[in-house]
Length: 502
Image 1 (tube, rainbow, N blue to C red):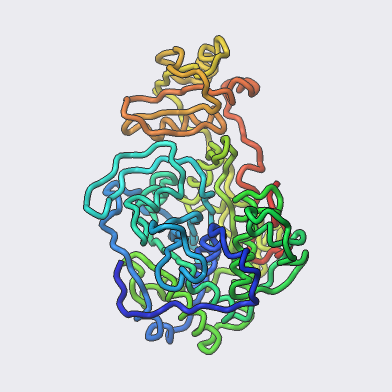
Image 2 (image 1 turned 180 degrees about the vertical axis):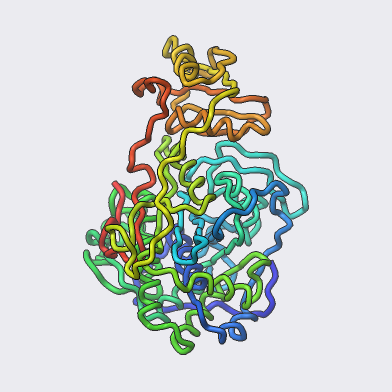
């Protein structure tokens, strides 16, 4: 990475939460990514920002981006990655262990072509994905990694600065969306940012104790946060956004919900101060000192140009969602076809949530949002050959699935028993150039995992999840539970609503 000017990130003192509460960094990384980046993107209409920010912007090289990138679609897409770098002041705030930069949270921000709507989609850190070839610091490229955790893409090359290009390659392959810009955020400036804005209103669904911040403590400890609404800043804000244990089921999914609510509250607080130089300058300085961006956003005028594209996005039209998911043991699997339809909607620049700005049908200003999509018509299955393998001990399962696929119009080329018969999850493997046919097959196996393979064609290896579900019936694709991925929330929602999962 390069920096056009040396500028240390500011640090906030905050309200001084207990020392035991300064571990567990996933939330810090996540909130830094969500809040700092969106703030910079929402600072619009202020030409004075150019001179103030130009010297504080870090950039990273784009030589690690894939040569086979998706075509540009409607709207624009910004990938935001949180980093736990130990560099500089990050160490004082509890930076990552060891010398490898890591990322536990990322989201893709889609700004619609109408300039009035935006959607941020969060990626759970443990999501199982395929990581395509990525460039190492010495110039070599890695082989494709299958069934890898999403957050491991950032660690490819094992440098303190991470590998944002690898994460971008992974997101582009996963979504089929071209990422226009990538922003990496460390959390050194996060405390200063929350202090500069005068604190951020948050809400707790229950009392939180020191033992909730650090489950290794072995005792409940003192009260850190009381139940209900309150305002946090500095270190206390860091403690809030990293909360995981002691609320709901203690999962990263619940933490994502609270971080989205935190981001919404911060955006509201900034807007309440007004868009003027005296109010925004301290925030802009703190934010840019904590950002590293791709060369396309590597100057203040470029950053400002993108910010200006968001000046008309209302709080009601700033939406947050989580990638449709389900648990697969201790990991997270992507739910198909829900995820496929989400990405297809964004590629076409269509709304992916039917809720209007006032919750009933029209935005506050009376201007219509992008059309609410109806589900995509099922793609044609004509000519798609599928081999089916039984990966369980349930007899006749491959023949049963083959019959359903034939009834749907697929060409079943083979049925057989898989080499291993202890699979819990159905896997759909696909060879070169067969990703789209594989996605079509995945519509008929909700919850299946897509994996690229060297062998040609498409093959389904059935897991116990297929054996335990009802028949498809008339060859029609089924719909996963609506809870997969959760409902979207807007930046205008009540900060005390939907704060935990489980």
